Image (cartoon, rainbow, N blue to C red; front, side):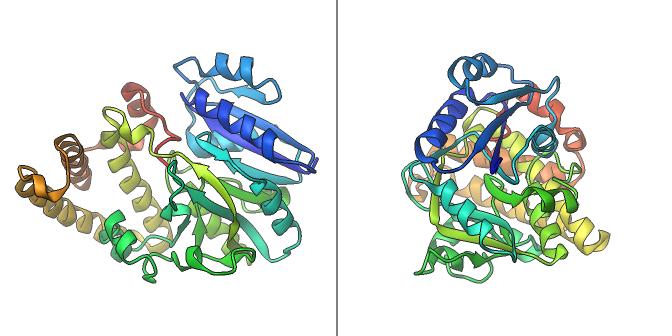
Length: 335
């Protein structure tokens, strides 16, 4: 079999249905299978997928195993020579998967391949490529700055603006919303790292592939819509996503740069959270900042949680599946 498409789902049944339908509508000339791994959804996702996606193989985990473990489960049941790990809230509008498969098959030096991700309004999603985290790029990581200074080397986003999108361009990392990799290589580098429940596991995979001696590339001619951000819009989403992201970055930095650098990162997040909270308190009463009250309070809550995390008070980040299930949040939508 040419390709196994693995989708991890948690309470995103409607998105999965649309995703699977778009795959069949726009993918030709490949022998492929679709494997949906359900992470113990608490809504009607399983029923929806069983009824409306008969072509997909549904695997049901008894517990929410997180993104990395669930994808590894999907891999263990797959047959394809090439693997595509795809978020449930993605949608094809063109033969992007075929283009990616052809590129990977004809490029012996490419280990992981990502594509151009679009928001629901068809605007560019700037997070489809990444640089590995450092204290500096984490301190200034704001969507506003990304939009104003998109070609700044700090972001690693220059490949998104290349004129020749038909050619793959090497980057540090590509988003886990859409990652294609050869089966044999995925096995050799040790699968997705299960030390991360959510966030950073996609960058860790890219790092392992680079250490193996192969490239991580972005193919701009292949575009997929990534609706994204669904869980962060739900009540309580910022309480989970904010501290969990910081905890995952901390683990990555501790592993790649050592405990002292990780401690400096935690200290920097403490100072940044103080600054952000102060600015929000001052600016929130004024309408001219372009921030409605609901968004402002959500941001304030998120940075308050990150402040608590910097003191080690958000202890649930060590057992995140409990917080996720209690809050009723969608782990895939936040990516």
